[in-house]
Image 1 (tube, rainbow, N blue to C red):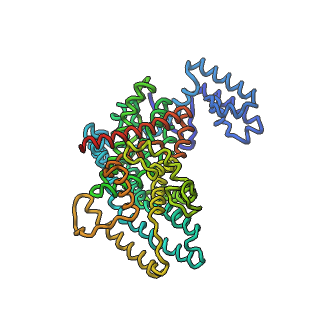
Image 2 (cartoon, rainbow, N blue to C red):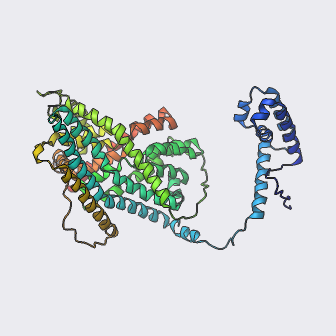
Image 3 (cartoon, rainbow, N blue to C red):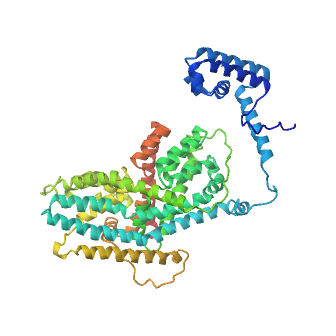
Length: 574
């Protein structure tokens, strides 16, 4: 059939004569109504009425005559064409667009492969696509852990050194040294919030890596590559996109399930999304991996992320054949964007927005929890101490944690210190580190004399000098990622007091199997319920029934897997 002539002077889509007649009649009625004529474009509103747009019909419920006329028009169109008006209008609009693009577009030879197609033949290959994806993810976490380490050490040194020094000097000048105000600022605010903020470089490098993959167009390919593994658990490959979002934060991952058309797919994807380790868990992984597995912390971090994916696949396989059996498979239909060179502006905006969201949480949720934690640690419940002058094991916080601690003894970390950090982790996963920082600072804090503290000039000099060293060490780490050592690394950074305290504590409570207990602890952190904000989002998207199912199920599964890691490891070591 010949293409209809295009009228370059008018961009309005024209329909068949019968449709145009009905549109014109409704337009005339709309124009005669003063209110509607001024509020709406009459032709547009007539078409919406013929398509029976529910929002428009609801909005015009007071105009009963117009709605009756529209219903009569739809009946005449259906009788004439034997087809619903909305389908007819859509088909003719698409036909108009088709002929328009056919006239104005010049398409390249269909048989000629672009360089993007050639790359896709490799990265989306049936067999090589998945190993390439896993290799890229390993490289991301290797870069995240190795490149960020010097900056983490620098910020930690600034927090525990110059910042703490200046606060204590100012308090001493005000005659408040040794007071409860000094304790809440040093052991509460600085130890708690500072213990989390030191990991800002870790998240910045993670967000940098993910932004590069997203902006280049690779993440869309990742969903295509994951189509086959996702089908094994009864989900479309598109379900992997909310899970990728979950690597940043679980909350938007729940909201991202809205891209799935099938309710059953949305529920199953939402139940599996929390197993994708969010950015808040990463500092916990990196801290414990650095303490207990210093030879290759990046491999441990990658292992945690990979374990989350494996657990999600296993659970999805079971749920899709029991509680959430699949009725029919929905095909994967998605457009792969061309590969693009990531733009610095887009990359920076993603890093800035995501990192600022983390910092904002540190100054709200984590600050509030750090003060609350200090208060609970300052209130004596047993012993002879007084407020802000009691042994921490006699505090209200220790008493609360001690009631739960025995449940974790089979996992190798049945102490109130470790258990207490997991309890506060329900508020936000970053607070796990904050709690342990406060706990071990309070246990081992030995104030030094003010006279021994450096001057402000010395502190400022230390900040500048140590920053230069951190930048140099970061640059030095780049070739090490691929196994090339350009410089002698004879001088390794000394572990911080917090790292030493955590190491000694886990060795003690696990009867010398600290590394195994730490691994079980990480597995529990990976699997157990997400933070309270994520739980609220889950309830909103999936409903209370599935929220409670997920909350109880994840925590129970976390305990079982932690038990398997520790007790199974002990059997293996024997």
